[in-house]
Length: 235
Image (cartoon, rainbow, N blue to C red):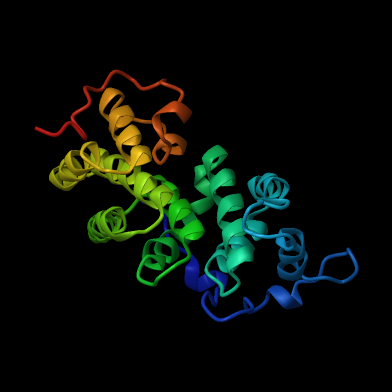
């Protein structure tokens, strides 16, 4: 299990600036990493992702950018948080190890209410973490709650996928995932039913590549090593 360095990195997640980031000057106009990245993620509205793709590419190369994205994702500005979450999820899909220093931070972020745009990206990232037993239990409980209670159909669908992915690696939670699948297959929300059918047709296996654990079936490569799937097949 990768160590969590959240304390060492000095993140102050819920209430604004990250200590130290404003003092870490960059050459570009003396802006700190925090301000520079926040500026790149600002502008427009929630219907667009702004320059999140460019920031995601930078995060794959620069650990300090990941640090900033985690802080901004858990901050108070909904637009910035949504785009930071989008950038962080995209970067971790290509390089899941960038999340390792923030395992505890991300695993405990679910304890607070988040905007739906942040929640569905957390759903995608949680299965990429090497969670301990207690973290996996809290994660699957949170995912079950979001599947059943979230208003966003995207959150519901991503919570279902993440629950199946986590239960594939932590078999003690298979019953919860199977129960969610049974509910999803009977859902009155077309997107949720469609996701459930896809997951049933192509279950997530325990040896799924780490970067693909939180992805819906159509996004996965299919390069799994023949482990017999047991997950998300409701009786």
